[in-house]
Image (tube, rainbow, N blue to C red):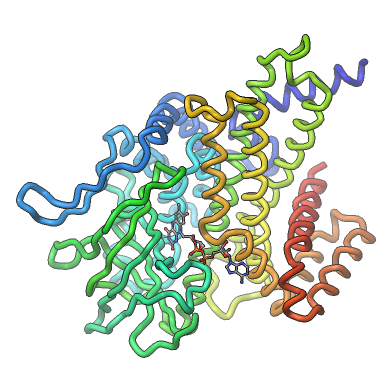
Length: 495
Ligand SMILES: Cc1cc2nc3c(=O)[nH]c(=O)nc-3n(C[C@H](O)[C@H](O)[C@H](O)COP(=O)(O)OP(=O)(O)OC[C@H]3O[C@@H](n4cnc5c(N)ncnc54)[C@H](O)[C@@H]3O)c2cc1C
């Protein structure tokens, strides 16, 4: 009886923590001091942003204004002024400019976590702006940086947004085969022609775009990364938006089909390093996506907890039913572990984000952890959102409440920047070619008991020695267990 009461008290404390992203972050990242601006940002989202976000989700894809009254093509996304206020608030709060000012990715990662608790779709513009800023600041020459960097770092409403456009109609996984956008040299610039099929933050002022320089190989080695502004030097639109997608969720970011027709572009880095730069962009977004996924999972749990405390079944609050209470406890622990994994990916990214090819071992460790985190946090988000909807019973299925939204949003987090298969297979590759798992096990050695570590290491090594077909076919179970193992180990280190 006393033990039950103690468990209820612990759970009640945990539920309070669950209701606030910052309280949860504080309890999970005990070694990290959360900045004041983040507190203010959260307060704003709580008081004003959430209502705007709910409305944006209900209204769905915004209309695209393609022409002005004189018949000139303008391609403007007709969001409400309230939406723009919400969007610009995050930029002004410093999710992006603080990254340069503090020379660290933490402001973006933490801001994306908090954003995602209220609106996972809104986290996307910040993510892709970060993923534009990073390659521009690393690989842009002095002139390019002078021209564009200050615009991305502006602290007022005029701030520019970024975007990352790789995927074309034939697919986003096998970019080496499917990218048909061609790049033609034109003096110090390039001209790009092709179509991007999933272009989030369509309308962005500046995009990083994958294209194939003329004569480039028909594989990933033939791709390069380019910077494309919304307006060309003549002041005309430099790309057009063919249409906006009607998606199940992430209504807070316009995703469109973009047409490039002799669009002015600048090459970033060396063309022969293009695929590395493209993967760097994707990996930054994957880490951001991991923070977004745990923010969303926390929100789904927080809403489920609030409902279960108020709902009375069989004579007592749903939350006090033993089966439900156990589920909450287990999921809370899983969420804490997943958050640790996402944060580990952030910390490693922060160490290596300035590296260029050829990369250090630390970078290979980062890559493995980023794949584990993107994969596992998205799984946790989807499973938690599904379960949270079930906790609400029939009410969970109704559009008028939020529970169903979190499941829709979670499904997009799981797919974009590479679904589970991509993360698993790329994770396998970095273990096989760079032995990144050995670096991972070394880094966990101080927190995990030696025999569990040896067992997991032996299992990975055995798996990597399998014939290719068998290795890929059986990779899901291995990768899932490795992700759980890593997340639990990181959590144990705190306990
Ligand atoms: C809302 C939304 C916004 C997006 N925004 C952007 C954006 O801004 N920029 C951008 O570039 N892309 C964007 N994408 C595209 C996204 O990144 C792709 O959907 C994703 O990378 C997968 O590509 P695909 O959809 O073409 O699937 P495909 O590449 O056709 O793959 C289909 C399925 O097969 C799986 N698969 C692939 N290879 C293998 C294999 N070897 N073994 C087993 N399974 C495999 C994939 O994981 C996937 O599940 C967005 C997608 C969505 C849904």
